[in-house]
Length: 131
Image (cartoon, rainbow, N blue to C red):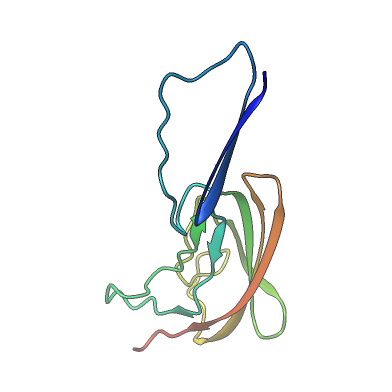
């Protein structure tokens, strides 16, 4: 016979048990917002690559993102840097390695979650060198 187990507490867990399979032991762990099920793609809004140890690198906070293409555009809409946000971190330099001038840049991120969904994010980022 088919049995269903449903536990409600902040999140729901569902399990369908079908004959001839059964469980001898069962453990449930509560999840928080950073759990394995959460999809996170947080783009910072400031970069200060001045070697002071604070915001020196543009690190995107990710969870359950398997692919993330990032483009950095200048104020005229020209792409100055592209990179893989799951493997690389931006240090305030353009594609050729030249440090970019202070100013406001636009970040476009297009990615794919581990569940197959496409996500898009955009954010202005302030690049400040003398801080």
